[in-house]
Image (cartoon, rainbow, N blue to C red; front, top):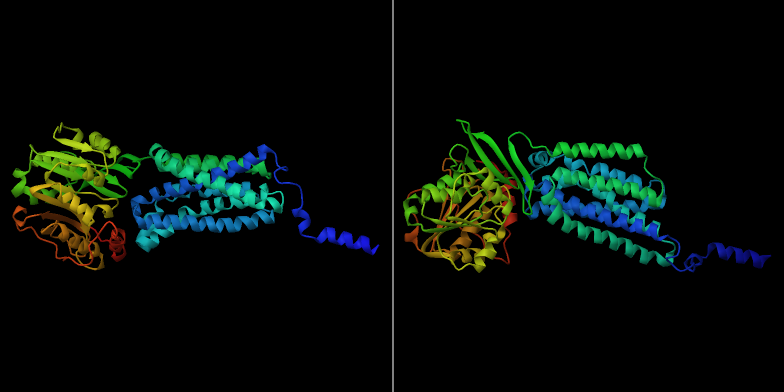
Length: 518
């Protein structure tokens, strides 16, 4: 009897008894395993769609520089980590089915649609960097947290015994990662240009809702049909409502490069109608509807600064076309000038033809090249009497690749002997926010012997962020004569190079100091 008791005791307590069970892979039907991998793959796809589309959604408020991208990526990764942690415990407890978790993910995936104004409030209350982080936490973290719980559930469901847990975990994780890879390419290259953001976020929520249905079929414990129907109808209604154009907006779309819109509104005391092209929250072009003349102060000031020498301009290169307001103005100031425009986004050139002065008349001397500016300069052999840098990737941020000593050297090599380099930049003229302007001026001095930086609006206070017009040349005698008010900010700090250019950090300090605005 004692011998039998010992044998029984060993068979119930020996932890290796389960491990010696049958070979893995024999306990689940192919259909069930396909369902598990589909759930993993599609959940990974949804995470990357939320991440990439989410960054675009807050771009009108925070841009697409390193600061908001860091906030979004950091929050997404944190939400995935917390979701994975909680998902493992929920899966082991067996009280909350995966279908319920995915339904919660579908509901919270609609937060970016209903909370579209939240980033504006967050930036106003919390500031630039904290506002970006909190916006990502509120809009994207809840849905991603729920999606982060999917893989632990599926690993548990797919594991037959301890001897197969490593293989099962690897397979499910690989499927989720594969979905994320496809999601990144599809969202960035296909879905963003195809759908308005509210519609894309709504479709993502519907996809997750379908995953909840699939999870109920594959793993059991289905969500009640009425809950799914109500959730789907709610998300669809929000998506359609969110895609409607607000008053004064003539066009809105997501291109491969930016969140773009065209608006029309009255400006100034005389309430003249002005049409604007917006890219990632910044007004990149503005024209008076009645005349087609540029409305931005920098374009007006540029014309006045160039006036004494405009007749000697036979050719010009404009880097950054937007709605082509500046190239059209150059043609009007000097009808015989040949203007090459480098604009990376073909979609905004199409909008220039449809909504702005460029499309209202024939401008045979304006040639638009859709190319990255650095790539264009590397392959160009032409020389110009004027090179004008007018490139922004947000409200006030200039892409760092365009302000390094290497980029400026490439621009100087495209100038004729007495050619002019000009640039439109934004900066305050006092306080800690002047750091970028100081280092940009240092970098300009490494390339151009003669540099001046003029104030586009001399009446504006120094502490206010404002347009500044850089004018530089290889010879002091080539600079336009005149006594236009100059910037009081002097050169300081290190030269910006392709290997070291903390431009986004320096420009973020403008927001941290308080943007002000002209």
